[in-house]
Image (spheres, one colour):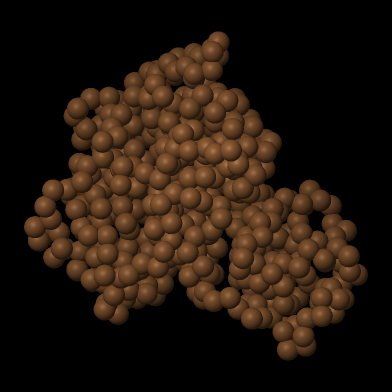
Length: 426
Length: 113
């Protein structure tokens, strides 16, 4: 954590980052929309594989580009990324090309053999998704059996000597009281707790009203973070809570299109993992390649959307608020998918401006057209289903059945994880 | 949270001996300075000026940090700021004593955020 106080300072890094970087610091890459689970809050509405999914060779070309751009690491998710038959091949390819990998999984494929393999690598980090410290709370969101699946994975990792896996929790109305229990669970498995904010993205839009923490719970969460924040990761996702008072650890900045972005399974590039909607679609890694630039680099550097996100933003209705510098207006995706204006308050604004905005007439609420849910009934979690997947590379064998305990989706990936704590300060 | 790294350099020791970037650290120059990423600890750091970056890169060429600062013509009134920056880098294992075994073991610390 180096925030060298340097001679001739160039100003606050946060101001630099708001103007964007030539390459993302890290990015989220969802390798597949296929998932064995059907978490009610899935940010990517995953379930069925998209037939246009990038092939192995196309994925490797993206990795080559990330290496050229010196993107340090990718947060791989989905869907459940480990059900791709070429998943380990791609992980190896990335780490051999100086692109570190953090991947999110429900744990379905983390058996003893895989755990041992992971323990042997310095360049791969694992996040196990869990949304309740008890099976009852977790399975209500992630589906029957998903708690046991995750815990088994954590146990396998610990037994194999994997150090510092992450337990990744989306904070909801029903698990916010379990934060200490999650911490204890993490300690049990030599893991680190990572908690992130529930967004009304993907299927999350259907359940957000019922699952997002109440105003009182937000305060509880803030106090807990102040007391425990040093040992807990947050992906910087709670910066809207900074308006309670003291700034939370992290960058406290919306990095969408500025320092982070999302590549989806078909190569579409969105401003952030929580913004899968055509309004935040910047381009495609296949379609937008030029003679001189690969597709991803061309999108990152040239897309009109990203250029716009990097231009100085106004605080809009928030600019007169005394807390604007702390919360920066909150989360763009949270506003968008609740039908609020992007230059107004966050729906969970802790000063209460979000509540009044939500109560006003919001018109038609935007809905993503990207939906890979396996059934139309999006808000009922179901038990894990077996998946047998192929990648598009001809002749590649499927890795066999998902063992009856297929994987889940990464419902909680947040782009800003990994940024240095000091950067909240100037 | 795992225990803090047990073999990080003690504060202050940056003043003695030859230093270098840790083997698992990648550097990406930026207009404001540089981004550093440590693949072992999975931590990201920032260098806020190109001047600090130049000094960091030159460390292996000098018998100690003060020599590196002199060679880079760092003005006297800025030396304490450079030392502060380098000490922070040492504490987070981004730079390590040059003679040290390159397989320096570091407990993964939180990568927060």
